Length: 207
Image 1 (cartoon, rainbow, N blue to C red):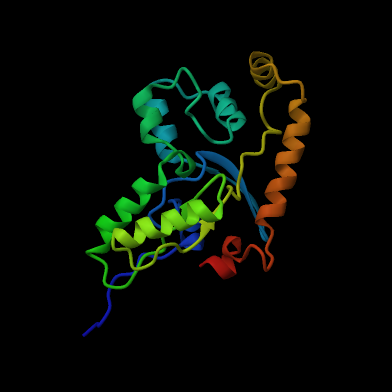
Image 2: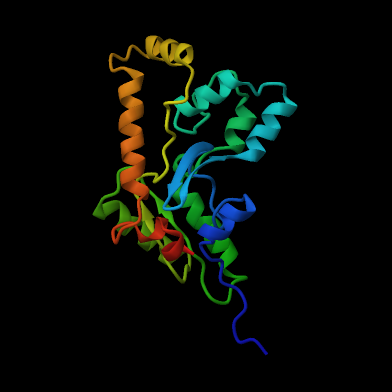
């Protein structure tokens, strides 16, 4: 009786309730603080934590390192390579691969799918190339949203000072971590607060 059956949707609000990630996307960050109009809460990749616990690696120090790396584990030496491959954030996955997987799903979807593209340095040439590649792959919808930066970078003000200092020393950075944390927190608030410019991050607009 149904003329249409499948249309993978954004699921921004229900994913927060159920504890999974939005839609069919990889996590934008493995550990971060998300702020909404009703408050703030920590979002953590529970699958990553489970695997690290099973390997006997999970600790407060490791948690702080993940925070310092804005939710990425790619530059943390003690984490095995197979775990790094498994828990790449969506910013660390080639978007061509994302489009290829969407095309593979597309033959089983009679409507369309909410495919978001993540680019750190988006420009007209890159977006045009992406659209034409998706078109050649047979996508019905080339892009739902273009994400040019994460709306939920990890806030680092809860990171242990010893971890901050050791990380700063090893990288030769001169700017204090407290100032970086304040800037990160301000950016998160500016990105996530509900407005006409960020409707997709509002639970009322991003369903």
